[in-house]
Length: 494
Image 1 (cartoon, rainbow, N blue to C red):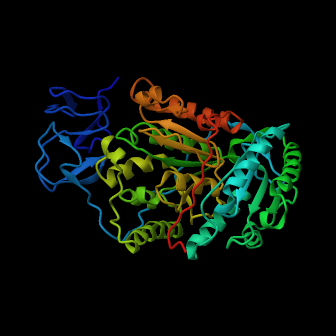
Image 2: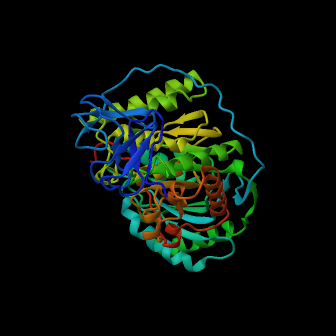
Image 3: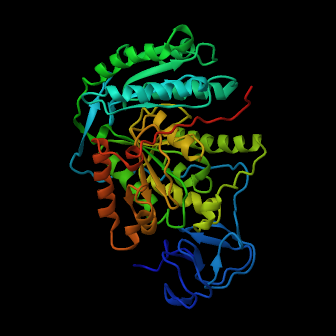
């Protein structure tokens, strides 16, 4: 196994792939550097003397500047590095041109083709509460209906949330939009929309957001309008299960896949192992005619120009500029510092600044051109790589990916997490110790990339794994019965 890696020939730091002891010799270009202090896995060690105020270079780009002189062979981290990021920026479009991805033999999965032409990778019954007041009822209904499962119907899932009333402005719009998106999601063979009756986002209001729907697939129940809501739900669930059980898996080209990409609990290996592997996967899927969605906008800060230059048109460049600056304005409206993003777990894992985190995070986008930029809650309509407006919070961002149409979310992590989302959420570890320790959480290990695996082989294995999940293989969170959702809250609660 490698002990360290120099990611780019321009870098003036190496990243420890294992705990390095003082005295370890690092070979950098035409010289040797002796490590002067113990360096934890994922952390950075300087390859030359870096004077105070000079840039620290990783991934071939600055990730911040030193706040003091740092000698060669020393640890460079939060104690002696500071971000270069500031407030709103002016951007110029420097297009890289059309990226041509290598074509390959068409891949297939076994999916559920819906009557509207969309394809799901699960055939579940979803119970969507319009308001948090009926969360417990929704959960009880789901548990009761699980006993009725038959045919191809795989599960009954309730998605409780605390919203739908006492909200104003964008928050109320976000709730209605996300709920409607989930009601229309193809992973659900049938949906029960459960209302209370007096909430702001009541069923008649929500109907305008849902749009056209199949009356056999979507049923509505207002608890205040019936004597016994459990008895009423029992009959509706019979109808929904009978309808959904008619769907069977069928051979479907990979071009029908929409895959969300997200990272959380990142460490110093995220941008070296798991995120680049997901990026290579994204290129493979797009070459098949499929779709990927990249989100968590605050974790693009510092690497946004790389995405902007990959925009297919000037109009998409302008949309990406707005995507970035609108989120910065959101931070400013709430009197928050734009660049204070890395979490305690990120820092412990070796990430020093937001640029450090962002340059690693955006590795998930691969090399394809950006084909569209989506507002929060907007369903994807364009094949290829899409950018989606959503925050970095794991549950909120993963739910946003599902709401925009992702049938599966790929979630890379260096720290580990048990959370799920409304769709199968594949946990991808950045390092092997995590995969070995938390085998009950981790579905796919990219730590082998710094051991004995190659990117071509590992990304192909990930592609095959995703096809298996799309064909019915359960991920660890599904096996545990975990299903989460969270809606982006930005404003006042009444």
